[in-house]
Length: 153
Image (tube, rainbow, N blue to C red; front, side, top):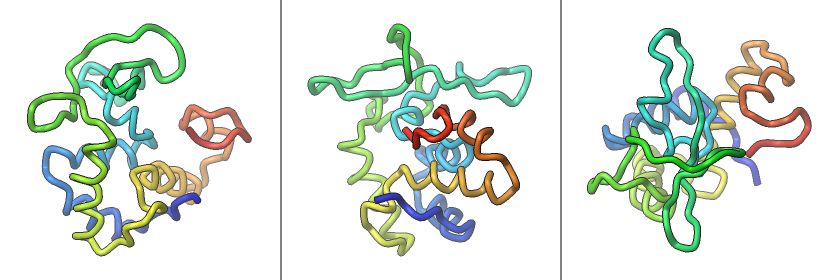
């Protein structure tokens, strides 16, 4: 079941309820269309200092109970400093972030706490904003890193 994109009011209210250290996750999801693993794998080194470009080069994945860095599609895993970490400076995992941070902000905002309003709704909101602004589906598909017609990640 796909989430319905949030309104600007919902997004703003939700972002305000997120702890300060995690607000950038809302910006990366709704502002850049990233998926949760890509958000958790983002590093300050991924910003181009000469122009407003963000390079998505890794994600955080859970493999056999261990959090690892993995490329979003292909390539070799690497270690970097992350934007988002837990209170112990460890990489975020869905199993801790979703119930401990995301769900708390959802409930505090009054947005229904159901499967449609998981973190992936930020990606849907990003796509909806671009489509409403007149962006083509083909261009949006390129931005999201998905071939036209194949769905989202």
